[in-house]
Image 1 (cartoon, protein in one colour):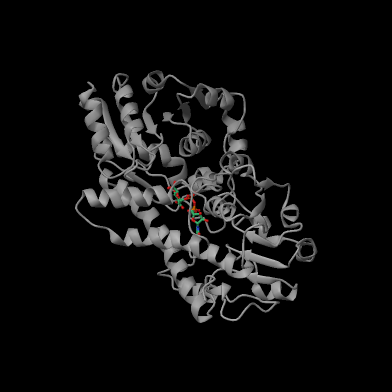
Image 2 (cartoon, helix red, strand yellow; image 1 turned 45 degrees about the horizontal axis):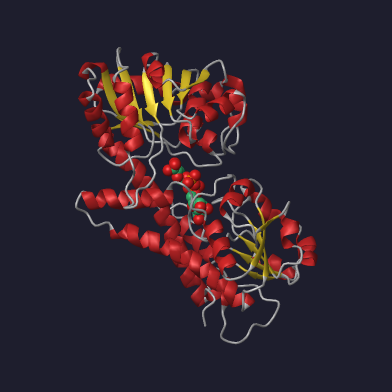
Length: 469
Ligand code: UGA
C-alpha cells in the first residue's frame, strides 16, 4: 500500500517506520524542514529501541521524507494524521493542527483515499474531519475518514506497534475497512512474525493480533478510555500504597494478591511518585473535558488526577520527614525522564520534584541515562548533571530514585554505601527489596512498604507515613 503519514513526532515517526517494515511505501510528511533534513541524513530524533535499525533499513527506499503534503496525498491510498493535539488552557485538546491538515489535503484528493486519525483525539473528531474536507470542496465519494488509535508506549514503541494486544479500526464503510485490513494484513495474518528479519517481540506477545472493527466514535472513545483506565489503575494502587504506609502493610504483597486475580491483572499496578508523560496527564484532562461537553460530570477522573498530584507531595513530605531540614542539603537524584527507557521529560514527576527540592534550597546532583540534555533546558543551572549514578551519590546526604530505569535497580550497593555521606536511599519507584537494603546498612524508604531503618528518628516522625507525625 502507498501511505502518507502526516507529522513526524513520536506516533508519526514510529507508525511510518513500522508501516515501511510491513512492506508499505511510506511518505512521512512534516512542515519542519530542519527535522526532515535531520531524518534524511540519518539522525533519529527520539530515544526508542529498534527505531534506528528500522530507519536505517528503510530510509530512502520504502520510507521517504517530504514537506509536500498535497503531493504525498496524491500518491497515497491512505493518509494517517499524526500531528500534535496539545492541551489548551481549558484542558481540552487543541485540534487546530488536525483541522489545518484536513483543509490542506482536501484539495489534493483525486482518487479514493482513506483519511485516518492516528493522533489521540476526542470523540466526534473524525466527523469534524469529514465536515472540513467537504467544506473545502472534497468529493464525498473520493474519501472516507477512519479512526485508528495507537496504543504505543514510549521506550517500547516499536514492539508495541508490531506486537499489539489489538488493532482498533473505527470506520463508517466496508470499503474503508478493507483498506485498513490490507494495511495491517502482515500483522493480522501472522506473515510478519515468520520473517527472519522481523523485530523480535516481547515475551507473551499475542500473535497474530486481533483487528477490532468499530464505529469511528467507539474507536475514539476506546483510546481515551484506555488511557484513563490505566491512569486510574496507577492512582488506585498509589492510594492503596498510602494506606499501606499508614497501617504498616506492604503494597507489594497487596499488589501480588490483587494482581493474580485474572480480572484485575498485575500490570500497571506499580506504585510510585505518580504518572507523567505526554499522554496520561493530557488525555485525562481532555477526556474529562469531552465528558463534560457531553453532559457527564466524570468526577472519577478528577480524583485520579488529584491522587496523582498528591503522590508527589507525599514523596516530598517523606524526604522532609527523613532529612528534617532541606536548605543546603545535597541530594543525589537518579532519574529525570517521566519513566525508564525514554529521554522524554514532559510532565515528568521527577522533574517536578527536583524543581520543588531546588525551591526548598537543596543542592541536587542528577543523573539520567537518556534525559539529561532535555532536562538541562528546563532545570536551572544550580543542578549539577553528573556522568553516572555513583557520581550522583558521592557525598550526598541522601540518594533519591525518581525514575524506574532498569540500571538503577542493579547498583553496586557496597560501593553506593561508601560513596554516600549518609547511607540513606529514598526510592520513589520501589526498585529494591527493603531487607536487602537493610542488610547493606542503608536506611531505605520506598512507597507503600515499611521503611528499613538503621538509625533512630525522633519519635512521632514517620517518613514511611508520608513524613507525617
Ligand atoms: C501511555 C499508554 O501506556 C500507551 O498505551 C498509550 O499509547 C500512550 O500513553 C499514548 O497515549 O500515546 P506512555 O505515556 O508512553 O504510554 O507511558 P506508560 O508506560 O503508560 O507510563 C506512563 C506513566 O505512568 C509513567 O510516568 C510511568 O512511570 C507511570 N507508571 C506506569 C506508574 O507509575 N506505574 C505503573 O504501574 C505504570
